[in-house]
Image (cartoon, rainbow, N blue to C red; front, side):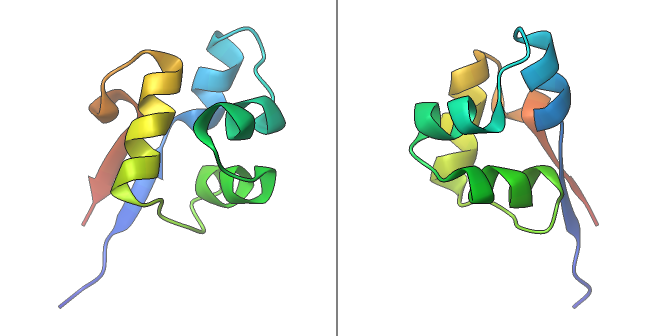
Length: 70
């Protein structure tokens, strides 16, 4: 079975939300800055729970933050 890639718009959404820093977002969602960096760079796919917490932090639906590319 071929692997896919989880894509995200976190960096773009941080900019839209007044230049929210990676550290600020991490604190809001209960993660480390290093975790946010890895997710943003698409080197790490977040747990479903963390993905939903990130979307909630931006006040947008999950699908506006994350997508899956087969």
